[in-house]
Image (tube, rainbow over all chains, first blue to last red; front, side, top):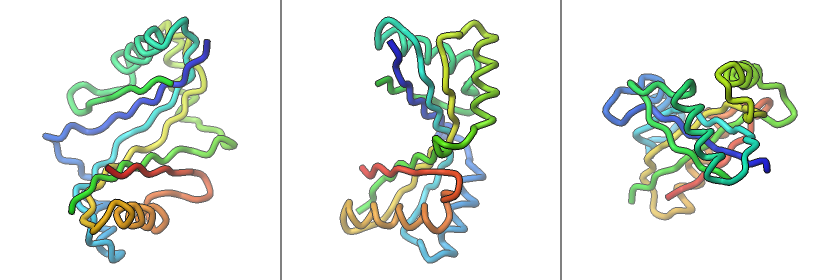
Length: 81
Length: 81
């Protein structure tokens, strides 16, 4: 069966996110002062051929650990559907 | 009230995603052949000061249209909580 995994990878809360900060300031210049705490990460979708949802989740987790995320600077979450 | 908006911006399905393709091939080399159709986009979180969830959604939508997404190449979705 083919499952779709949605992986969200964000910079850790403890770390500065210079890209997010720059976007935050630019949004303020566009008269969107209500916006704060912009943080920018990655969203990755994958199709996974697996026997069960759990197996697909495990494969996505392995992909994150082996390649997709940087454990020093980022955290990730996976939703399989 | 402060709301948190989660914005997901992905390359349009009709377009090639060279970054996703490169990651797909690398994952295959790491013995994760079950994975296909890797697509890589952005995930942005914002705090929004607004009177209601609907107002916060509207502000996030305005931010997307004014700056965050490229209408030629990307689509976006917003979840406010």
